Image 1 (cartoon, rainbow, N blue to C red):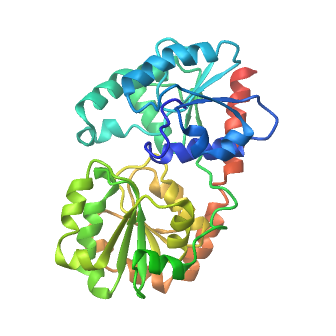
Image 2 (cartoon, rainbow, N blue to C red; image 1 turned 180 degrees about the horizontal axis):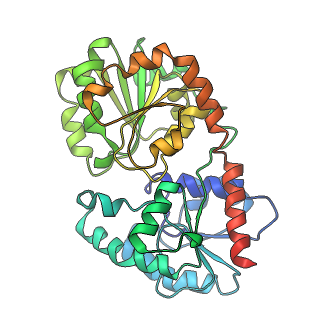
Image 3 (tube, helix red, strand yellow; image 1 turned 30 degrees about the horizontal axis):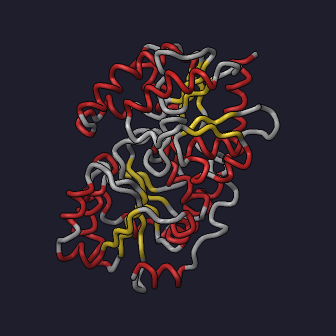
Length: 359
């Protein structure tokens, strides 16, 4: 996990951390190689596994790649298996290996990537997929895209779904505290949890708010880090009606995130592309209705447990009314659907992949 800069890599960080915590105890002797600061950010992982940290924070891709070919190569000398969690395998590596590919977004939306990163992914990811003894992906959608893009045999790919912990929401911040802390007022809120990358759909949702939802007294709460669309999103928020009806909070604690979701009318997720989309499962597990786009893996993950719509603004105009009218049904189906996506199920699937390679 040398690529896993805490708080900077999006959902892939939580995906693998939750898998590690769901891995059956005392079955494997696991050493986690990660950037400096990883253990402090994930004390529960540190309490369970040996963590070897780099001498640096891995913010520099070049320095991290060099460390993967040197420090990781040395650390993995006696390993029976090396699991590369970030979609790439260094040229100098040890076998056998498991490679996690989270998505192939760079192929569908190359315009959302900086030129240097796009060139790197185009060169390294196909080669990494061919080097791996086994590939793990979070959804059937990603599995099919990997097969089609890299001509990989389907038997070499396993689906290891995202999983949320059973304690999700236990320490959620109370509603009254959140309303005061973030000046949310007394009206209904909806929450969009996503880094401000272009594919996440912030501008689409702001259009829906401006045309339809703001006049209904809805407050949109945006949570998540700063991405490539941060500046343009901030500019939109200066528009009169949006400045009054949208609260952009940035990154918040897990307790605040869970509390905001629990008090929301719905989680809103208009993303153009997801390899899995963990926030929709988090919402379902917390008993919160989901309104999502119909793109990529999202229909696969949500099933009939949420309102799945095409990215047409008019189609979203009455979505909140639909959720309100069928709220109890969406909550019940969501809670049942979320049982398919637990950290234990994810960890057991990871263990099965390890056993398959080692045996």
